[in-house]
Image (cartoon, rainbow, N blue to C red):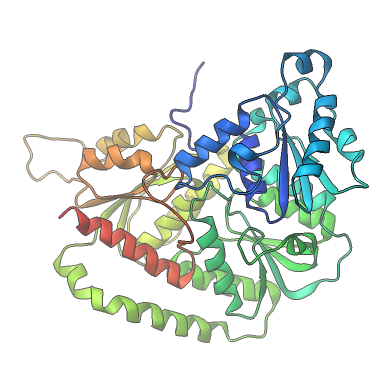
Length: 444
């Protein structure tokens, strides 16, 4: 075996699909997989999603066929049929979605023919999400794409000021609730009706009528794109991509690009100016201590493609920190890597950060040592100090090794609890600044 992933920062595609369905309102997931899959996913969520796990018909309470040896030999469709029957009887929901694990994918169970038997009794969708198909981010796209094809209304009349938000993956983004809410609040400032699917303000009606949107906004360079393409082909909804809007610079760019795409008759620059004025009014009292206490830092960013790009932009453009190393920990192909590298290096950052794509995050210390080799005899050697590490809980050891403060933002987050905290929009930038500077001074 030439390559392995050390301490992976994601689930399998089944886990991503399950997490997505747990976050959808009034939706009941039905697992068709081996015993233990749901439990493993639940405890992985508990240990990585900032203590968020479960809920109604989720976590350890999710319906599952729990196929065994008999089903592997003779087929598991009878067991799935039995499980759907009992779930419809016991679990109250409006949409039921069957998702598969590795075992049932390998033996070739025809889940669509089984779910079709229940179509006159409930809205039910089937998605092939065998764990070997990819990681949890792809599970998000697989299951949402099936819902878009099978459940979302066809031929809906378009609403010019209605948009859907894609690319923020529930639980894999531990701050997904707050981030989606922040994006909604931001886009509402330019008069849009925003469908975020997963927050407490969303309903399943919003999902079903989402084909009426005039535009899909994918807040990722990679994730959510397949779902957006499905919307485009099945419902004629175009899409644009953008960086997760953390802080004033990225938020202003999103407002401009969305307004342009929809050809809105709104004074976007006036809105941006007003929000920026309010943003910097909050920051003004921190300026003196920021300079006097030497709170400008070299930053090391480790995380998935959504956060690594967004945090780098925020730290450089808005907080004035110098990004030294950016490590992407999700598996990306060469085309995606080239696209992201170009985006970061061509962004006008005042520093030229080292960008690496390596799923093994323990390698970060090696990259830092290569950039700043230790020379015991040279007391004037350049070092990565003062530094700050922004990543997951797994980066605490890295922070200790280089003597830097640390904040867990990207998955897995096991040392923080997340409820409705978020980092998107102008207000999200203030929240992130508060968290970063609090961590920076906490150890003094």
